[in-house]
Structures are given as C-alpha cells and as structure tokens.
Length: 114
Image (cartoon, rainbow, N blue to C red; front, side, top):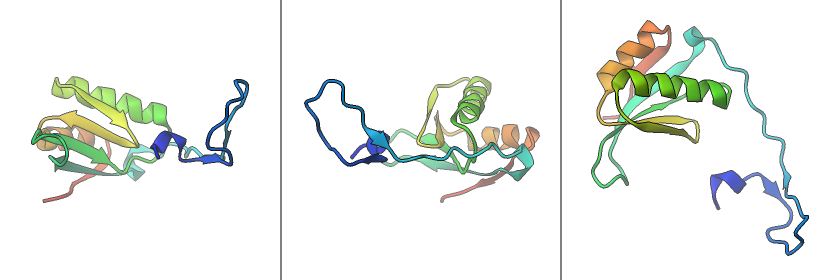
C-alpha cells in the first residue's frame, strides 16, 4: 500500500464516481525552532543503482517548511534532489557541506550512518 493512501479507512474500491475516501485525521506538527530541531545527515546508496544521495531526516514541522529547507539546501549545493516522506534527498555526497549550512542556520545536526 502506498504511503499516500495509508490513512484511508473502510472502503478499498468503489465504482461510484462521486465517492470520496474517509481519511484519518493526520496531525501536522507545528514547526520547531531551528535550535530545537535534531537533524540527521547520512549518505545512502541503497536501492539507487549505486548512486549516492545525502539524506536529511528528523525534521519536525509543516511540509511547507521542509520544502523550503530542501530548496535552500539544493540551491546552496548546486545539485538536484527531492523532499518526500519527511526526508530531504540531495543528489551526491554533500554531508560536510550540508552539515556546515545547517549549523550556520542554527540547526542541531549530526552525521549518522556508517
């Protein structure tokens, strides 16, 4: 089951064109201040055909704020990436540069993984 449809209750499939799924109430957390965020920066190569990506996890807050942080990191590193499932993925190995950028912005960031 896709993560997008994880909170659907009851009916799995309907032929009624006017049918709307009932979703569980998903709480969106208020965005914590930068000093209270505990971010983890790690390198990941799994299921990416050997390509390395830098993952930033642990952000607590609204999706819009996560998107803004992701865009900032992608711009400052000069590479592509994406924000999904509460994680920021930056193409390539930019752990040190991202750690520096996050710490200058006031985030608590740690390197994680091997």
